[in-house]
Amino acid sequence: MPNPISGFERAAHTDDHGVWLLTNEKVAHLPDLVNPDQPPFWNFAGSENFTYYESNVKQLGELKWDYLHGGHGNIGSSADIKFYQEFLGDFKAAIGKALGEIAFGSGVDAKTINAHTVYLPTWLDLIAKNVTDALRPKYGKYYGFEHATPSNARMAAMSMFSYQ
Image 1 (cartoon, one colour):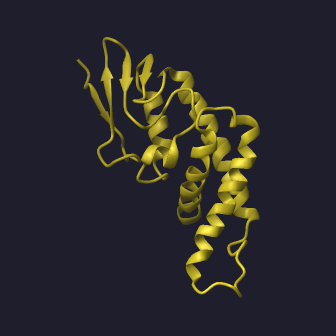
Image 2 (cartoon, rainbow, N blue to C red; image 1 turned 135 degrees about the vertical axis):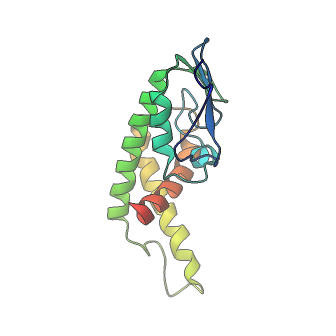
């Protein structure tokens, strides 16, 4: 019998996040990575980082299963993995565009502040709004989009700015 637990090379949600594979039933069970019928939840379902999130979705898609139980929402399928991969591609492209267009310091009047700490959250908020607006025509109808996308954009923008 194959190993019923599959860990991630580098987990995003928690250090020990993994997939329970019910091999006879062809079910993959893993809370909080992919929620079928919706884009990624707030901060990528409370992930510790965005850096490994996309590779976790890819690794899940490479396992052998027919049904996905993501812990929240509906039962999913491999179509949900394809949806997430398409969303993440569009999402990263929108963030990359926003990072190139929104200068650090935008939205801050340096004459009226008394601390430099306002720069980063203001910049991230502008990026989040830009990304959410850019993705709304294609993804805005999905459950949770308006509430999750801004926090996901802030998290991913920090990662992409810092590491890529």
